[in-house]
Length: 238
Ligand SMILES: O=P(O)(O)O[C@H]1O[C@H](CO)[C@@H](O)[C@H]1O
Ligand SMILES: O=c1cc[nH]c(=O)[nH]1
Image (cartoon, rainbow, N blue to C red; front, side):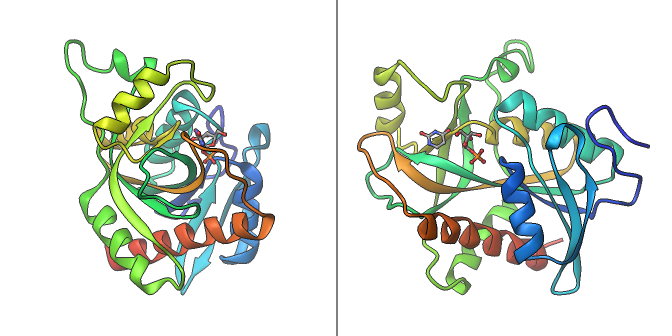
């Protein structure tokens, strides 16, 4: 039965879902990576497709931006479409100077200032972590994807894209945080609550400490590495 935000029928989604932020990226993955992909939902222009990869059913659907948005889509996929695993394919701003543009961060933890997470469990500072098996498999898969470079570590899931708190950014860097983005912590907590599995693979598109531009070709490759790592992680685990 359709939900308020997803118009697909039961069985339209595969157990494994790739989740980019941008609906156009979902279309690109469906058209260039999956086989026999068909559109299964387009409510609010948040496009979802189901196809196969190496014979395995896989879906791809966008999350939109921010913890509230990904929390809605992840909850509805897990709870009403029997989705078992979601891997977010996102961009992030690099905080660690060990990172280069295009590197893929396997987010093994997500600190957050999200208002949604603040009140999740009263009196508790919740630990936002991915499924260990998916994270380990995705990290290992980087060695099989030509040109992919991966680092694993904590990221910061922010409610603000335009932060005006440089001292907080610096403190997070001082604590070894690799990158900043806006959804991973929300996805991890929803997966915990629904007793399902999740991971975020974040491609570095810019840096918090210097200006950098990617060419269009570099941007395309950027996501291809993370998508290939995610598909291999799905296939290598269950
Ligand atoms: O590229 P996506 O997956 O959208 O991720 C990042 O880009 C958006 C901000 O531009 C936020 O959603 C942030 O998390
Ligand atoms: O949320 C994001 C995504 C990319 N780059 C940033 O600085 N922040």
